[in-house]
Image (spheres, rainbow, N blue to C red):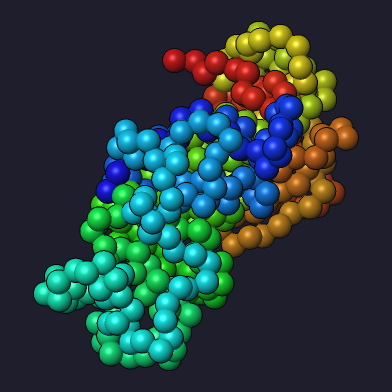
Length: 357
């Protein structure tokens, strides 16, 4: 396996781009360490597929380099990059058995029969498909077909990186958790460098050790699932990750205080920088019902099973709070407070408060 580094990478589908808006990918600098589990997360149209095609060699970037273990592969064609890809739709041969499907990538490279037999047995055991090795792929369920597709990517031991492009999109929801768990288990066993591309935050956060969040062709934050949830560096990350997403509220700010709808709010630390549009960011989990807070009117209460989501109006601003028990009645007046060490200001979308040590 290999360390994958993207250095000053940019791409435009225009022949002569003249500005940032002409680029499908803004400048990207990312390093995925050898043997790590990573996710590339973002909505449709954010540039995930473009980046995936550049890494695999299907596209040559307009600017920048792709490095595998420090070796420049930017100009190399796909067949010389030793990349395995697993797609949305399983890429297997229905007329072959499971055993033949798993063996095919090795046979195609002239690997000796004894090694093929050993590797097929190892991967089949990892995937829990040993009983179906002699079953024709056409007779498999969709989730087992995707397992075999994964196995075809993992059976080779000369692969630099395994890339998963929305691999669970066509899988029934009740089977997704099984495949997510299996994929995580596979990574822990084979320690391959894996990059998982998805728009689904649950898939990204449960699989990856580190997540690259993209929006509009730009990397807005790289971090662990905990870091992305606890301290979003951009309002997009706060809104996109979490259910419900972070409250983004208009405010004014000075020092380590903000004013929201005429109420003074204590922040995690002092506000930095000048100018721009300021917003207050606080997750619903850090909004509480507490005496002595600021007044709000309950607009709606949703019971989501594990907790209640309270929609409240503060003046003309709507925000959400997550509470565990004893929800207020819709239409009632309540007192809200924000947890200070989890409340921060963003300037033009980017975090603009310093956390206290």
